View: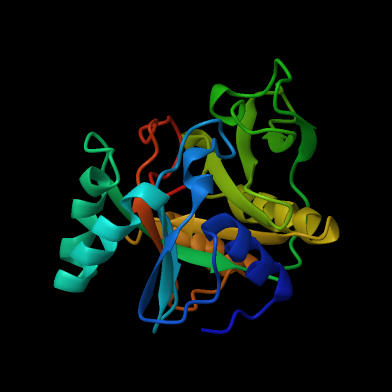
Length: 236
């Protein structure tokens, strides 16, 4: 499987421990699965796949048993839910998400300002993000309306996560913020990526409107420890 951009190839190679795939699903033993990720949590199993092949990154000590199970049952719908226990995390679940990226964000007008994730005005859901976050405020009273956090997985892969306050939805804020954040990631030499669960139609609409096309790629893996984090799509 050929990646469309050098930065995406670099990111996936570092994030997963191998890219591109050489088989239908490469099971890659990756020591990095035991190291904290962007949020300080352990992400023990991660995978990305295109329409024909993909990579599943797993802890080295569990790679053999996971590969054996996949060889027995190549149906991802059945194989995936077995992986958390095989990887040593039986209390967690399995997620599947639509995986997108862009090199040409939509030319939408900026809608927010960049501030430190630790700034007292930043809403709680944005504080786990390191560095700066993008926030849109109500010009009349200063209330938070929407925001984008960046999951800086490595030097190249910067995944965007967006949330809009219920009362501010329908104004196009999310798409403007996502496009603004994507432009910054590209300016800094990275590749902006975007994930959402398959049934999250609102998130899919934002992605479509901002230049994150659906190429038929998926992401999957073991859910985060804080999968129910307020405001976040479980896949993000």
